[in-house]
Length: 132
Image (cartoon, rainbow, N blue to C red; front, side, top):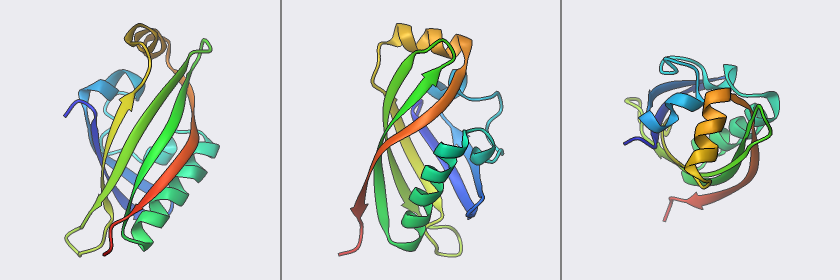
């Protein structure tokens, strides 16, 4: 549970965070639940995430990502994540469950979390078809 996040795709400009695990607390603003994800990441990452969510909504698929969070003091924190769609009450794949794992030393992660994350960078996305 500490690495999980859940969000709702409302439209191409709105991705509302519903649940965010405890391992994310220090890397996101307090009380991130209920906020639009796109208001809290830089423009390049917004463009990348919008493309990923659009692909997942329009084609039943999951997405495996390799990204980096960049600390304000130059720390580079690689992380991987798996984004899985689930069906909304309307039957559309617009509710996402993600699991994210930082691949770096916990000491470096703690230092970056204390000083804040400057931005996030999307490196690679692999789509996994869920049909047939």
